[in-house]
Image (cartoon, rainbow, N blue to C red; front, side):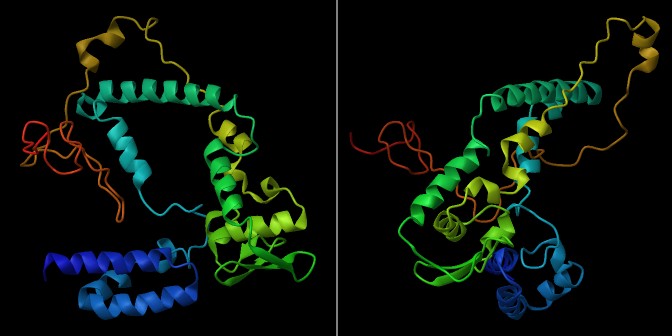
Length: 272
């Protein structure tokens, strides 16, 4: 099978992952199995859908569907990864210690009940739904109309677009209903997105590990950690993180002509 097969299957699999409801998931799954053939059928047999799909996941992912956190961390410790084991671990510890302290200090300056990034996101969604038609059905159920009609239940924190349930953060439909009800949108946000929750994550400092009190015996050659007995694999080791499906790459612009192409200033032939 050619490279086109892998791209098609990856896109179909992604649609199954992000399907907001079980009905949509089952529809997308039929297409995936049909176009994927025997290979994808064997793969799915050992891959429980509740482990990777929005529709069947039993917990809360808060909208996260990729491993960018792990990949970003690997990129963040790019220099440390090349060090000997003991030095690598100690440098990562110091780096984490400084990061935790910086974020703790930064969070102390926040004034919004939720983290600034999510506060900005909420304001954008409020603006999107500002002119939508919102009708009350009961004391906590509303019908919101934009291009189509959805039902919002403020008591159960659900919307028929399923985005509120998936992310734990009110969607634009829910925010329109909340303002129609005269409520405070911050009261409908999961604790995960709040400033207090963020502060609590960095409230326990990483304690320094001083070695000034260690005696010479503990610093002697007898305790030096030797490298593991491993064979280096062929080829150059990978240091860049793997990009997620659908992740856009920012184009590089030529500093001479300003064109967003693959060439650079040295190889530019554009007339100036």
